[in-house]
Image (cartoon, rainbow, N blue to C red; front, top):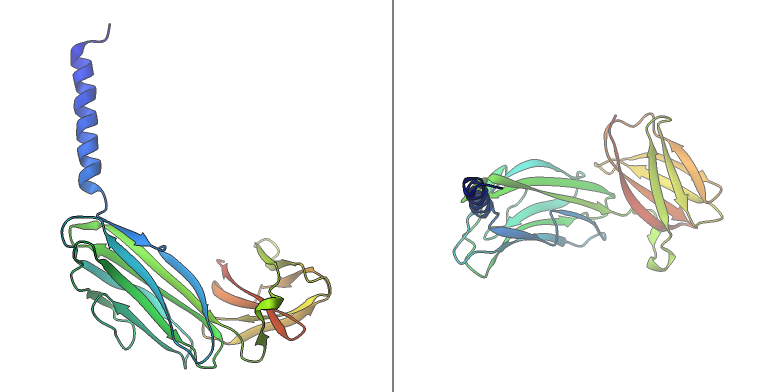
Length: 233
C-alpha cells in the first residue's frame, strides 16, 4: 500500500513544479518567427518585421543587443524598434514600453540600390521581467544579381546538399537542359561562376571559407531560383 506521506510528497512536488513553470513562463510570443529569410528588389526599400506580442495584462519593456550586422557596401540598411528608427544598427537599446494589447517591434529595413549580395543581421532580445529568457532574432536578406533578369514565371525547383567529405555543393534541379550558377559572399562579391549541362551536378567549394553564401541558378539568362547555403569548416 502506498503511504499518504508519499502521495502528499508527490502532490507538493507537482505543485511547486507547476508554480515554477508558471513563474518562468515567457510573457510574450514572437511572430511571424524568430528568423526571416527574404529577398528585396533593386532600388526599393523593404522592411522585415518581427513582433513581440504582449501576453500579459500589464506592460512589457524590451531590451536588445546586437550580435552581428553585415551587408554589402552601397546598401542602405537600418534597424527600427518600437519607438525609434535608427540610421544604422545600434549596439544595444531599449524600446518604448509595450502596453497591454500592443506589440513590440524589431524591424530591419533594406534598400540594396543596384548591388547584389546578402545581409546578415542578428540581435538578442529580452523582457525586463524575465532577463534570463533571451531570444535570438535573425534576418538573412538578399538581392538578385543586377546582370540577370528575374522572371517569376521561370522559377525552378532547386535543392542544395552540402557534402563536407568531398567539399562540394550538390545541386538538384528540374532544368533538364542544364543551368548556369553564380555564387556571392555576404559583401555581394561574385566568387564562383560556371555551368552544369544537366539537371543535377556538383560544385567544388574547397576554396570557400566558413560563412553564408548566396547562389543564383540561371536558366536562359533568367534567374530560375536563388538560395542561401552555409559552410562550416
